[in-house]
Length: 219
Length: 83
Image 1 (cartoon, rainbow over the protein chains, first blue to last red):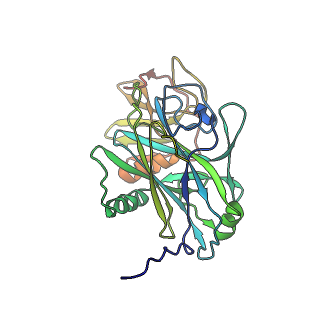
Image 2: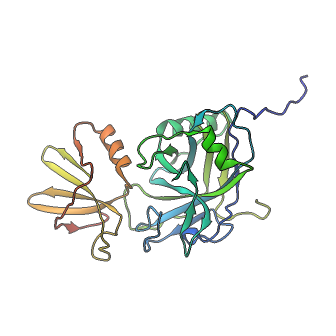
C-alpha cells in the first residue's frame, strides 16, 4: 500500500471558491449567490438589465503561491446553465462604489474581461464526466477565458502581473448574468448553478455548486 | 455593428446609444432591424458585443458583413422587442 501523499500544487494556479464578500453590487444582498431580477434601469457593468435575468455570483480566493511554474495563463470559468439561456461575465469586483456599482480589479492596468470559449466548455464537461458526474439533460456548460478589452480574443496574464495581483492572497467577487438566448418577456425561475474554475495552462481545477439559498456554515 | 444578407433577407445589428423605453429599446441594448417589403421591424437580441458577431460569422460564413468601427445608424422601424 502506498503512503498517502498530498498532491503537490506548486506547479498549479490554485483558486478556491468562497462566499461572496461584497454585498449590494447589482442590488444583491449578502449570502446570495443566485437571484432572479426583472428588467430595471441601467447599472454600470450590468449586461442584461433590460431583460429578465438571473444573477449568478460567487467569491473566490487566490491563496499566496509562488507561480514559479507559470509563464503566462488565461483564467477559465464555466457555468452549468439551462440550454434556453446564455450567460455573460462581469469584471472581477474588489469593492463597492456608490449605490449598486462595483469597483473592478485591475490586472496589468485594465479590468478583467472574458470571452465565450467553446474549448473551455468542452474541457470542463469532460472533467466533470471523469469524476462520474454528468451534465443533466437540458443544461450545458457555458465556458469563458479571460480576454482582451474588446472581449474577442483570449488574453493571458504573465507571471509578474499575477504575482502583483495575488501577493499575499487575493479575494474578490465574480458576477454573471444569464438571460434568455432568444429574448422573452418572461421571468427566469432561479436554479442551482455548478461553476468550474481553473486556467488554460496548469492542471488545477475546481467545481462547486451555487445554491438558491446558501446553507448555514457556508464560508 | 453588422449586417446579415441572405437571399433578399437583410438584417442589421445595431447597438442602441439612447434610452427609448418604454416605446423602444433600452440604452446599451443590441437590436436586429429586419428589412423586407418596404418595412423595417426591430427586435431585441441577447447579444452584448462584437464577440457575438464573430461567433455568428463563424457559424454562417459569407452572409455576415461586420461594420468596424461602428457607424451611425438612423432608421424608423416597427418595434416588436420579443418577436
